[in-house]
Image 1 (cartoon, rainbow, N blue to C red):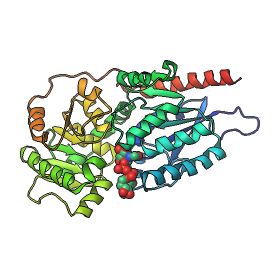
Image 2 (cartoon, protein in one colour):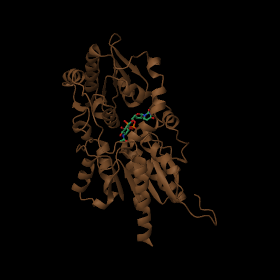
Image 3 (spheres, rainbow, N blue to C red):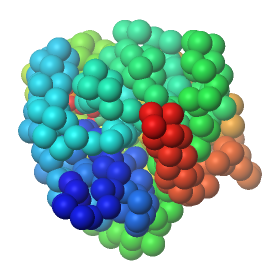
Image 4 (cartoon, helix red, strand yellow):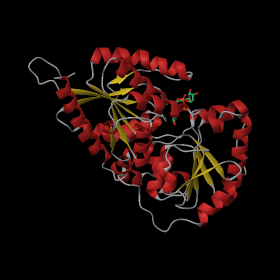
Amino acid sequence: MDRAAGAEPLTLIHLIAAARPNFMKIAPLWHALAAERWCRVELVHTGQHYDPGMSDAFFRDLDLPRPDIHLGVGSGSHAEQTARVMIEYEKACTDRQPDCVVVVGDVNSTLACTLVAAKLHIPVAHLEAGLRSRDRTMPEEINRLVTDTIADLLWTPSPDADDNLRAEGIASGKIDFVGNIMIDSFELMRARIGASDILERLDLTPGTYGAVTLHRPSNVDEPHKLARLLTELETVAKRIPLVFTVHPRTRQRMEEFGLSVSADAAVRLIDPLGYLDFMKLVSNSGIVITDSGGIQEETTYLGIPCLTLRDNTERPITITAGTNRLVNAATLQVAMQEALTQRPSSHEPPALWDGHTAHRVVASLKTFLERTARVNA
Ligand code: UD1
């Protein structure tokens, strides 16, 4: 902390990052906060994702510094992982005494750090608040519900999220519609994404291939479901070749169940890519098949057809205003044909998906902290 004798104490903000989908959300915010003179930001990595390809590559690609604090929690059951983050982060909070904690997204660490801070009476702000799938079998939905209930300031990416929060009884004064931070990352890195040589390395021609990601427990944790999805991908690949970046969870399950794709199918299995290479791959693809949350948004912004292998989405705006549709193993082939033949001629990104969300967040945070200090005075 910059609280040396005589020096004006700067407001200390903890920015929490944990897992791959968090890194592109905290990056624009870290850069925006680091440029402010009224605050100091400490980057806290809980260690939920720890493989170089799932973590270090993103820090490098997004120009993030080494974390100030690394909790090193690793994998485990949900209870184990959440509990370990809580135990370690409570120590870090006691030691560093942040004035405010900023959490993003919906992973176990988001929930764990929110609980710790709230119980220590440290204000918590949640970026990407208010999204709801209404599917409580998803661990992320539980994380979203609990985090939003106890956070003090809720930054939403779309008006549906504001509606969800108000319907749950959250005071309008806590809710601030700031837009989608993922678009800031894309715009911040646009030139470097363009310069990635991933298409040359994989020998791909723009528009002639599909990109695939799958990692949700509902798709990959049961052998018969995963086997069926892999067979369906082989069929899709007869129409358009596929590049499948395989998440560690999915890789583990495929090995455990003895599953793969047939050698003569045009489905290429590759390791997870860093942010720049992955966004280059997606931006130049003809179609995306995924069960990720963030990729539904990125494809909406880029105007690329996206087939989401889920029964529901917490991001309905990607369907109503975007290019996304929900599919399952039985509807994938028909949806793929339709998506490839009925591409929209033009499209507008949703409101405030404009690359300026980080600045709105910083302004909102400053106002909130000034108000809180006044109230406490
Ligand atoms: C987590 C998040 C999910 C997010 C996803 C993106 C929760 C509840 N889930 O799910 O919201 O969409 O990350 O990746 O927080 N593993 C590695 N290396 C790693 C990380 C994980 O090998 O760096 C392995 C773990 O040992 C585990 C499996 O992958 O067996 C799953 O990891 P875990 O972090 O538990 O959940 P995800 O499925 O990645």
